[in-house]
Amino acid sequence: MDGSGSMTLAFELDALRAFADPGAVFSDARGWTEYVGVVSEQPTYVVTNYTRKHRVRQDFFSGPRGVAESLERVREQFETDRHVFVGTADEDRDVAEATEWEYLDAAGAAEAADWALDEDGEEAEPFAESTRDDWP
Image 1 (cartoon, helix red, strand yellow):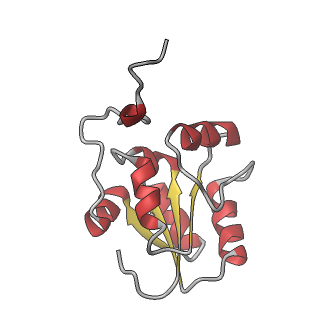
Image 2: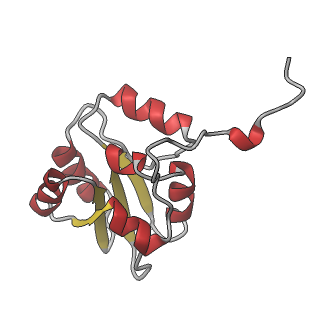
């Protein structure tokens, strides 16, 4: 990804699910963005459960709004040089264009930022490295 200027980065939930390690994606993105979050048409609890499970700390999220309204509000609230939306579908591209966000598909974002995609369709098990042998 281009690190010049300030950036707000938004992931559609399905795009975030496309990465092998969503927590690592967010951690890396924090090094070169000012704000990063998740937007989705899914209910808030679905996004919250997913991000908690993967230790993703968001600066913003959809709440009860849809993607388009969320992107509009984030753009108003977070004044940065660039606003980039990562999605997976033609509808995501259309929403990005309608709300004046740059669009990247998940594969393009993965290539630009050197993030691993979840090629086999199975999510990486979060917290696997912290499994304890001494736990009863």
